[in-house]
Length: 554
Ligand code: ZN
Ligand code: ZN
Ligand code: ZN
Image (cartoon, rainbow, N blue to C red; front, side, top):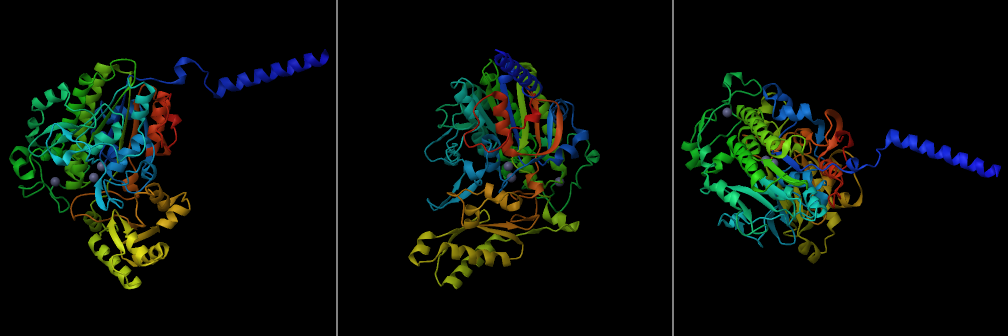
């Protein structure tokens, strides 16, 4: 009897201790802490947005755009891409699938398909047709992306009642984020058409709201003068408007404000000139706003997902460079477009009823010819010369013609049929070519297929290469150029490397379920999709490798 009482006392003590521990460190299971279900999740990607654009232009931003996200929401100040190459296709896929090209398979925008023996585009699909355009070049779907996005998982979780819509000027910026089970993805067909279009992958006709938008001639209304939003003499966060580091538009001698888009359109592929100006982002915001009513997004308690990618920031960066007046103006205008978009979300979905995040698909390098001028190591690389050199070397060393099938995306692809016929050991060829390439001026590092498949790199460039390396789709060698060295024109900026100017991207969260604050703790792009999945209480995207950023969640 005494023994039994003693046991009971011990049990009570144990239970009490557990309860105390539970209430201090683990949330009590009640309905509202299991998941937060906003009516709408909006995932915004700003194409080619470097993190420092937030700080460079901060003082000039209004209260309702970028600043609102920083002040009301959570700012991850040390957010990076964790793979190479940092291009648009891989970037958009990684944000929404929560993993890297190693798993989602979008290894570049275009890559060499070694089985089909041809270059392929990340969103092309010959099995479908464009809807809204007769162009053969607009046949697109997410088929090449191997894993699901969080929008896909939300579709499954809600018995397909929660919608998923993707919008961007670029097809890949609309299609990859929205996912495989999306209700629709809409992108902008330029040239002489000027319409938002989609694919038979989703539907056979444009929905009424899209047709109405196209008939409204909203796009044509941007054939107008592009001048700076404020007096250009007050633009202190950029270099001189006239300089040697920008290309500009055809038909205008100098790349200087103002640009008369109506007068320049015929020489610059018609509606494509709108894509290449700050107005492309305004047009994207107009269309995203129209989609809220058009698709009844956030109209009920079942979470919908809207993905919006602003592509024009990338076109402007490629044309004028990251230090240009044109970039400064494009971001000040994008800030206004964001403010307008958030205002509509407040009214239609309701403040506190939606969750939004904003990030980029990659950063960009300062124009190397400008960096050279200020004595920072940089350069231009001749890929054609390297290709010829590698092919010649293989032929001389192994006395066999045609061992190298392709050099693309900083990768070398072997012709395995030729290797087999001549009994050449692929590992030997890998080693020999790696050694040859490393002698090359401007090449900093080389990795072989064997290295990338045998071990795991935990840090440094090797880890970034490995996370961007897909065993089925990638080549037999991967090389890395010197810092700020690009295979690109002498004017304008580009991206693709694993260096901080390309990897450091903004990551802002705001709205339902999001804490207010900021961190300098390192976060990576694949963390975004698991974080949103945890917020919603849904299954993570099937290939997700990122972590939940619990410090941003309430
Ligand atoms: Zn991009
Ligand atoms: Zn300029
Ligand atoms: Zn780009």
